[in-house]
Length: 334
Image (cartoon, rainbow, N blue to C red; front, side, top):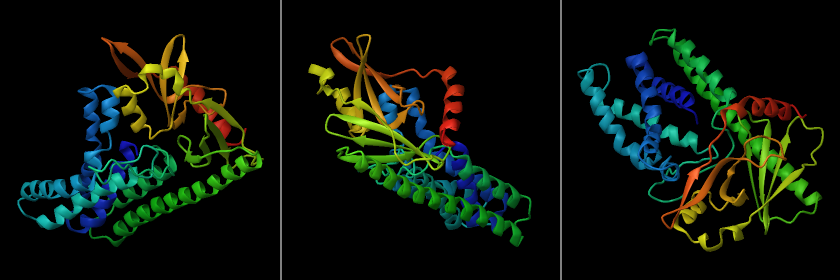
């Protein structure tokens, strides 16, 4: 999830664990702990984009990291306050829970998280977008309201818990929405007599109303959209050939193997003006139009000193406004 959401979650967990004893200090340190796992973005300063993306949500998002980091951080804060108000064990508990809820939340997104590092498995339930205002804003409002009361106040505790309950309730709704839309996509494929091997569904940006499906067939991938406001459940799909043959002798190049692993096999190869692109399908198209062939994550393949390399395709900031306008129109069923 985005940084603000992780800050709010960490702060709310910190308040629930130790707020009555240390007040807003629990919120502060919970918020800090909630952001720590995402410090792995620093890899982008030292590595190429492919390597940085491979390392993101790895060790720092694992249970092992939470177990190791919690007592270290707990000891530092325990000493900082000169052993007052809370014990070392209580501070360690605060940090562990504020740290571990970060990857647990990230596991619900499309990117997923390597919770059981060093195992390569990435948990990814794909039921919420990385930024969803309906999850974050109510959560934030309840937390801010709780901070307005003294730490001994029962209203403070109730407001904070209410924020946790509301956010968790919304998360459950997204899981139910995923189950419903999965059935909708599956039925639409069956009704159109489309043979497929696998379906992946996920919400589109900033909402849980408009959903998209990636559908694997023998030679291509299909992408379709369905909104709860659509008048029909007959989903239209756009087809994207796999085009693996375009790689030619580069099919087994190390960088291609890495990209294949990172995309979990959901990718296509495209060619424009003599340039090859590796398209990671897990995050879908840049827009919500089936006529658009730009993918959120696309890598240009190029040869340098006899070695095949990859660089992420540059996104154009000017596209953001029309994309958001198209997204809103599609959400409401237009």
